View: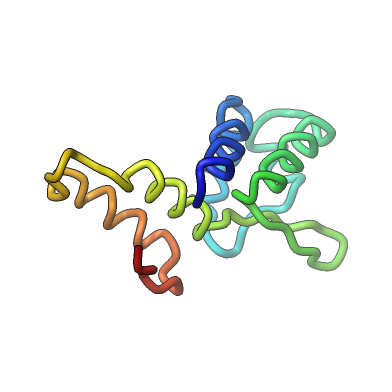
Length: 118
């Protein structure tokens, strides 16, 4: 992830409802949630959640797919892991063991993703 992508992602996450939605989708896992369920859980109107979902999708942090008449949203674990790795890239002034737990979490965000060399 480059700096521009990180800024877009952080911008998307800097709003309370969008942060709440991302956390919901991470908990939901690969099955994701329908837009209506997200609106209900977030206690916002469907039009309001639609606006926030569009922003999160634009940032690359979530994806959508149509299932019958519903649109299912899922967290983009590769992008979320990339964001954590971006933060930890130059970690701890030569003491990587301090950041090791966070780096491990970032690497496991997408179990199908292979570790990418730097």
